[in-house]
Image (cartoon, rainbow, N blue to C red):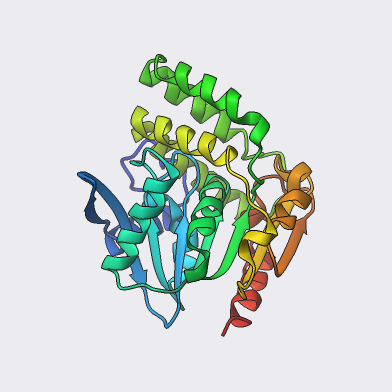
Length: 293
């Protein structure tokens, strides 16, 4: 069957994968709240007694969390905000809390991957009493020694033309998807689809989103967390990493920040463990979440 999509991004993608995306978009419209005179978008979906709050990756938005949303919404309520319109970590935390208030969510499981995991850490730090469990994927802890570099970079980013900035950031992030890794034909097709989705998103991303996420990441690196901050918290933490991921050199430091930690280290999957080890990843997630019941 030939792909009938008119989009240049999906012309070489398996039709069933593209049609799945079309259906996903139809069934997951974004909602909006006004917060400090800003429109903050998010997706709310799924059913279940427990709620999962999930944060997307770099340059993404609420829709970009579609793989996590698809997995969780079968058994959980899911809230996925867009991290695209905040000026500080405090504002981000307060904005997300306004979404949760509107959706009448009081206790929840927090998950973040890559950039989303950087945002999950400061959000957890400010709201851990309401959080039942924290799941971090492809993460690292705040690195205070990087703060000045981020400040210099963020000043420069303001002067780079939008088209060039998008090109530079896209090239940097797409390097994380190593197509030379060993994988099954089925997974290779899904990687090809995921890259098409990411390229479509990058083509639309605004410069303000790049600046927002870079500022928040720089501020994250200026924070400090330690296990004593969470005395009395009886939740659980699950950390996924890989022995060849960029954040792996700091995994012991990350693990030491939290109580009740289980760490999973995948072998030779880089930044793509959730795809290349999908069945194992899902099985571990399912077992971890069942233990919370």
